[in-house]
Length: 422
Image 1 (cartoon, rainbow, N blue to C red):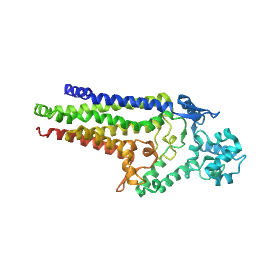
Image 2: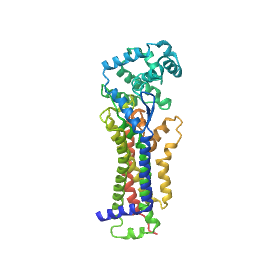
Image 3: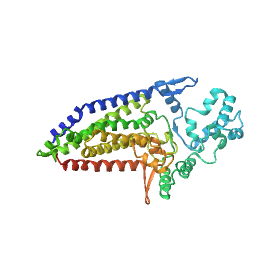
Image 4: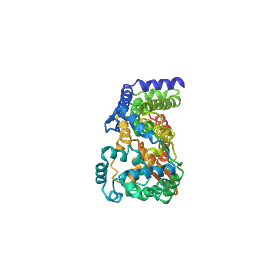
């Protein structure tokens, strides 16, 4: 059996289409991840634009300067200090009623560019005030509205924010059932307090880039499409199926080889994404909460756990499409048809205009290009009610692709074994 599996692996790798496509995708991923590092930009304290590793280091310094647990005492002190700084020269009542642009101009006019930069922050203040900010106002406006001591505490505001999001229903495109509302409310209540702030650049970058694994899925589909279809085209099916183990061990060897190749190639591509991200952006913040990416996230995950979940979902998607490709290969003779179906499902599904239609958004989120996005997975409150039972997007993706993989493998073997030799 081992020799058969080894033989089938060699057949997969020996095909020029496999080698060229897989190597091209690896080169493309390396290029994308390298450009991702060099295109990172931010500004320093002198308003100088930094890029590449300098920008990353500046972001790290900015975040680490604010690192620590957001206790009630710390929050009260910071919010009060911010209010005093912002309104030592401005009238909070006037700022609260201005437009975003007018309020920024007023701050810049009163405090200069450096003062405005300090008030608008390098990411911390917009993130912190995001607990109360449900109308996309500027941070100075939010401070004016809240005052030096907000009546609603930070953690109470986060709980209320969950209800605001559920009431909004994804911009009016989705009406959450009572079961869904109870599910998300319970999830948010389980988030560990106090939230700890800090730098999580490397882990955020992995989650931002993991959707590029869709290219790896396409490469794997190219490699596996000829698994059975090539036997039909080359008329070797008659030899295989008439041999002693052609309908048993050889078919099993093909499936095992396909699984091993899929796993190995996926691992290589994921290592590229993770290694470049962590090497350039740092490994710090693995134990910080997923709320570093969005305060509205109702999950009690760390950044490392969130990353592991996304990688795990990406792997299940890869296995699912590998299984589907093997099934199509056992049914179709045309490699082009198999490839067209795979491309349509992996890539083109992300281009379908959803136009704010909730059911289309939920369907598109099940496919790689849309579904491997951190917002959909962790803070867009994507859920699928089935009667009184609720499955979130993470669970639904895991279910769909596990079933797809488990169902397609035996079907691929069955159809090839029953193939009538011409």
